[in-house]
Image (cartoon, rainbow, N blue to C red; front, side):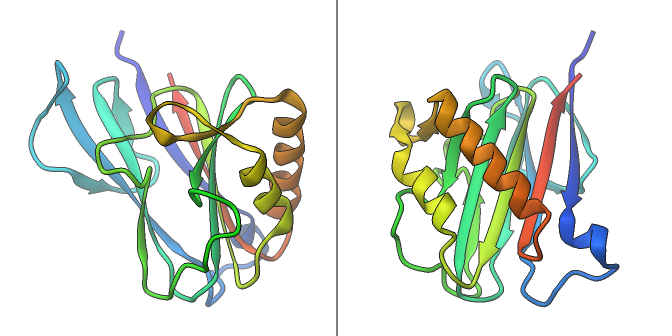
Length: 177
């Protein structure tokens, strides 16, 4: 049986209006087909809702239209988080027109586990997210992670609250069948 990975984009902004706000960032989903650990052909951009096979890799490309602060967290089905962006708290704003790849390291890809990726942009720092990044720990491959159950619960609550706000925030669901 072939496992597939489905990508569904949820946007609290879209739930409240038919048009994205001017400051909403845009995303592309990138797929890399592989076999036995080797890349098969060029990477390709695929639309949300694309089904993925077990041996395909996924990355997210984000276009930032206005200078501001960007955050990205991947939550797994165990209740823990990887910090995809920023690499550390207190960093500078992301400049308008910048394109980010998540994960930022070209050789890394999002894992094939049931998870979601929450992306948030704001013209000002989001203090609760800055605190979460600050409390994260560096793990293998320089990925920052939030494993402490209380810290993960607090971040999940903050992200859920922000999804209901009028900030530019999106959640991408990655489901493995």
